[in-house]
Image (cartoon, rainbow, N blue to C red; front, side, top):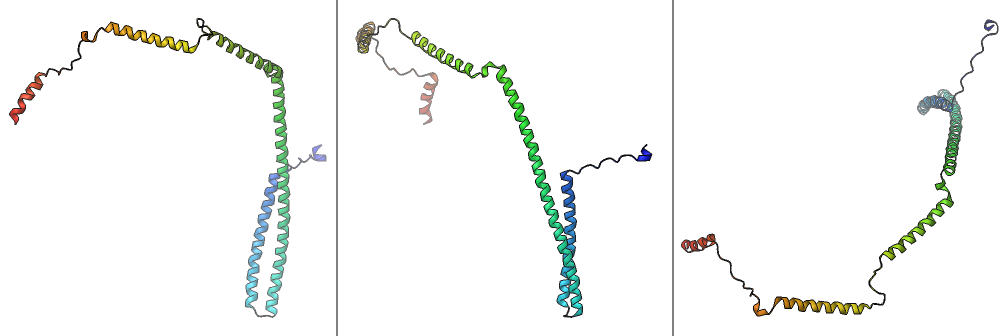
Length: 217
């Protein structure tokens, strides 16, 4: 059957934007080379026209230069078309990339939203009412702890109506009594041993050094 009707030809692969852009760049480079070659010819014709006297010879050079100039204009027009096509390709590629990035962002946000919903459903710690109740309980316990610390820090034997000046007077009287007791324990001054600052007894080395000094002189 294939010999009669022939086999179906495989469909040609659709070129990508990058491949199309590369092909346009290649065509543009070739067009630039052609324009450069024509510029060289035009410069030669200009020099020949300057050196040639007006007449049939100069007119022939001008006609050839005019033909080269027409070709140059044609190539420049083609180059402008290639520039415009490249611009369109770049814009299309930018749009396609933007769409892909948008799709990726939406998918990421969708997955994150689903994960957050699951976390809120499974964890009661993320319930705002639970968090507010926990904060209220923490404040109550902190107040209770402060009250307990204040109660434990109270003094048992001191009444509330004690004057601080009376306490200072009692402290001064206690210091005076201690001073009198210390004076009685030490006894009269004439019975105390005098504090004599006697010179120290010289050692043998010092005596030998003192006896040797007159001999040296």
